[in-house]
Image (cartoon, rainbow, N blue to C red; front, side, top):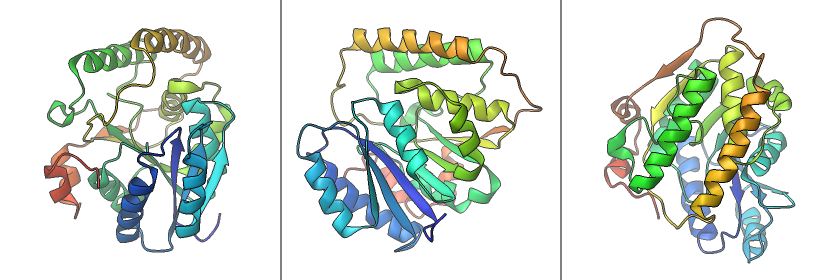
Amino acid sequence: MNHFLLSVVIPVYNEEQVLAANTRYLAGEFDRIVGSGAWQFVIVDNGSTDATPVLLRQVAETWPTKILHAVEPNYGKALRTGLEGADTEWVHSIDIEQWDIPFFEWAWNNREQHDIFIGSKRADPTLNRQPVYRKFLSWGLNCLIQLFFEHMGTDTHGPKLLRLSALKPIIAQCRMSRGQFDTEFVLRSVRAGLRLVEAPVIYEEQRPARRLMLEKIYINIREFNRLRIMMKGIGFSGLVRYRRVCREDVLAQSQASSEAANWIHTP
């Protein structure tokens, strides 16, 4: 571990339109919450073909930054690369166009109480502005996760704050990629008896989906079936330690609550 308290892991793919502005905004918030010089970016270039690599070098010239590379677009592999490349006790994993500062601030202020903080776009429907069909697909996937894995959470794909020392052994056991990698390590963490807590986050899509929806459904079904087979025989080590809080609990400890009232976090 190095002198940084936090690594901010962000997989990126062809993000030249938003990378500079969004990293600038995020850096200001992490300076405020964690402290200037107390955190680093760990950005994984997920096979970008635009100007993203050039912009990443500019980010690294401005803030402490590790730039890692994945050979092809694969979100799960990129996220895993970032988690394995982080060398701090705490990791905040987010997308470059989706984050929730009040959630992060609340999680950071309470970080010693839990091992994994999960931001759920489904925990509070008043905060979720996905199109109806995307809500339906997300609901369907999570119903399958709850049914086949006896999972009590409402979302496994949102932003997270992770205690890396507790999660490293679990990541080493994971075999999934794409959209099911973070689902796998959440499920394994629950079964291993780690302390998890879930809180609602604001979710508003900032751009069109990059895959055709039918293609995405097919990939999710295929990967879900692989995950189902892989998780057979992995039982619970004891009582489940999974908690939930509401948005009011998050905002009560966040100086960024005014931002939450404005819905959109784009700088």
